[in-house]
Every structure is written in structure tokens, then in C-alpha cells.
Length: 179
Image (tube, rainbow, N blue to C red; front, side, top):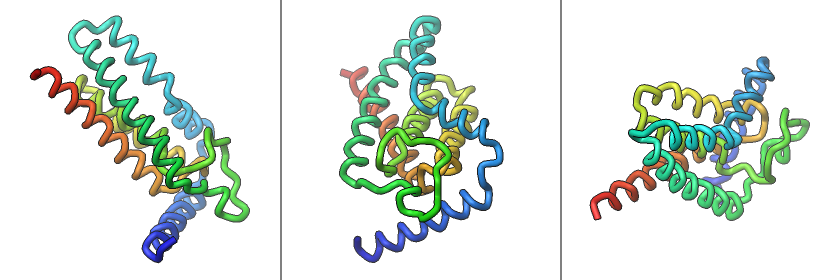
């Protein structure tokens, strides 16, 4: 690993330790529930309910979400398997994560990426709920650090991935509407 990446990893580890040890996980149930809500089924249920029950934007939301999540998940899998960054508990002696992660590597955070895809699409189609969705996405990302399965840099990368995936999907949908 080159010097720049070593320094970035060191800073990320120090930030992780500060958040994890200083703030701890005093609200275990709340933090675990935030993480669990970011697992994915909630997004699908909401999108299907909007498709069925909301005639104005439901179909557009559903189709755009399908494209955005396809971009996010495929990019997340490619990045995770190329970068192969170990999770904090594999690198920090004595650290035990509070949950079992869904896969081996940590960068980027797929939970955070998906949460930000959802938040940005909600903001695009249902602006009145954007702040609540953004808070939710932030809580999902923070919960992953508090549970000990991600570094803060993983969360930052996941949020950026979610933003790029949702913006890409929106651009594709807008382009196809003009054809």
C-alpha cells in the first residue's frame, strides 16, 4: 500500500476508533434497527406500494429506483471485490463488531449506498419527505460504524456511490423521455 493510502487508512481508523469508543453504542436496539432497515426489503416494499397506490409518480419512482439500485448494487459489488478492504474487526486487535456483516469486505458500504439512492429518489419525486429520507440514510450509515462493521471512509464512499447511482439513473430516465 502506498504512503498516501496508508495515511488515509490511518486517519480513517482513528476516526473509527473515536466514533466507536467515544460515542459507543449506548442505544443498541435503535442502532441495530437503523442498520436492519437499511438491509433492502423496506426500499422494495415502499417502491411497490408507490407503484400500486400512487398514480402520479409511483411508476416513474419504481422504474427509476430499479435502475438506480441496479447501478448501485453492481458498482458496489465490483468495488468491494476489487478493493477488498478488511472490516475493522479484522484489522483492530480486540475489536468485536456488534453484528455479523453480510460479507467479508467493508469498502464501500452497500447499506449506505442503498440508503442514499433511496433518499435522493424520494427527494426527486416526493420532495416533502426528502429531509426525513436524508436523515434516515445518514442514520443507516452511522449505524454501520457504531456497530463496528465499517470505517467512516466506507460510509462516505457508500454515500457518494448512492448519489452517483441515483443521479445516473435520473439522467438516463430524463434522456429516454426526450427520445
